[in-house]
Image (cartoon, rainbow, N blue to C red; front, side, top):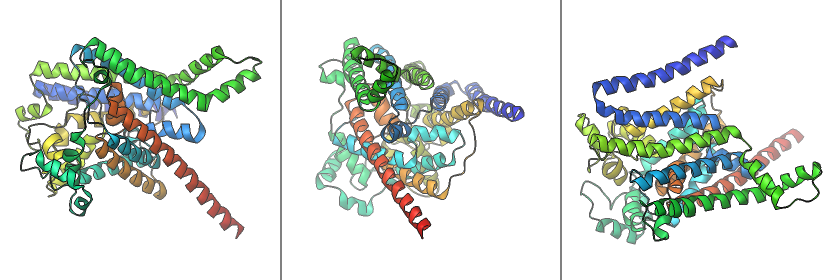
Length: 476
């Protein structure tokens, strides 16, 4: 056993050393690669935090709705609050890389679809990535399903165009996008240009009549009104619905005769500290997410670039760059888009012209995955999770059963659709947006919670149905 544990620690060092070697050698070749290395090491930190704290949005809501355990929901809120606090400083200094997205009812609908999918799959987008780093075959299938779905959905037209309202079509055409982009032909193109882009980008600071980049806008508007108060309200609701009765029972058993506000305050604080491991991971995760924006914006200023597309052009790798000269370069933690780019790049090499749409051709591009900064972040996230799993002796290759594989593919498909409709996943459309005061983040989150509830209820029904069949077979 000791020999096996030592081997795992050696592998952890090998993985860490591999990423270190990439950073050193690429920087020695050209100092512009430091930009990609910044993405790499933040991704590595995210992977370690996710694995250490077992952070997964699907697990959070499944545990809450199925068995009434709030540990993960609390951890997610801690990470969100800390990310919001740090990002408020970054925003106030003018170094924020965040841009709010158009929000509307579509955000909630997309979140609903995504929420159902993540429960079916047994993991959200970020959770599936870190579980892939643990050697989980089901999680790898989820990531693959999400990626293929997104990449295909971005360029689909044909019969799908019959479902496009005429108003979307006309509005998309009126945008007069470059001719190379078929904004009046693809379903997602018409949805984006003809519907989503017509919605406002709203932050809580703007709703309060404040400027985002000011101290009052960043802290009073986006942090206090947009994050702290809603998060506390959510935690209070979780306490009163799922935790309060357990606190009353335990205190009654301990001989406490009168249970009032003081006792519930103690119970609420106990809920917050119910898992130190999750809380610590949330603390580091939240701070790292905020710092990444500061670091990436600082590098952009230092290197004199606005987008990684300019770096790739300077390095002589302009293949797959969008017609605007850009590649996907959010400047903060993101998950699903770069995975879609992996598949999009492969499909393009195999002959599928998927650069004539808004998602790839106009905004994100499909650069070689080996030169895509966001890809470096996701691959390093998997690596960071693997290192933490190896150190804690939790790494193990797990081959999926046929049933779990089917659920993984179905769940990944729904998450892929939800991600593209919502312009992000549980990280990009919820976690990051909420922490930066974007109203659309809470809309996506409300939909995601509703979808998770539906998914849990469906699985309860499915399990009871399967058990009933097995019992009937035994009776025969």
